[in-house]
Length: 224
Image (cartoon, rainbow, N blue to C red; front, side):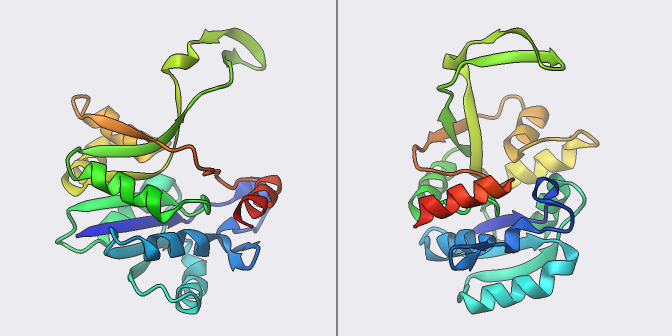
């Protein structure tokens, strides 16, 4: 069984105090509904676990009902940190889940085709992430805004979600992570199992993460 964990429990600090970007309106749906529908329509996904802020569980249930999310298995409250929310999602997965696909609910442009591609890859690899090659020049800044040097962009990728894992791989990663903090789930695997092979699936489709009001406007233009 393949279970998707959609993480939408962030504080949305750059959106303004008290704002939950997951439930902001994007064209004609809440932001998180776009991701829910992409996973619902993907034939390679069996179940969906949605992780939201504790005070948004009732709203999340209403959204899932409104948009007919039949694969929904559970809605669980997230933690103060993203990795705590992911761990909460992992605990809610069925015991027979062999593969898990973790996605940021703030990335509404994800498609069912991209989800299927990462699922196909994770069936033979321990970890997979969607990503794009860096095309801009990249500078290293060690303090303030002063350039300390340049990086070789040929070796750099911008990593996105969804990220897919064999269940044993991601559970062991978080079990052994300790108090270390990570910015994405693949980093948890990198830190705890340096020998694990993590493959990038290169997707050129728009897949921005909404963090500001301007991002919300851009996503609206892309999804029309």
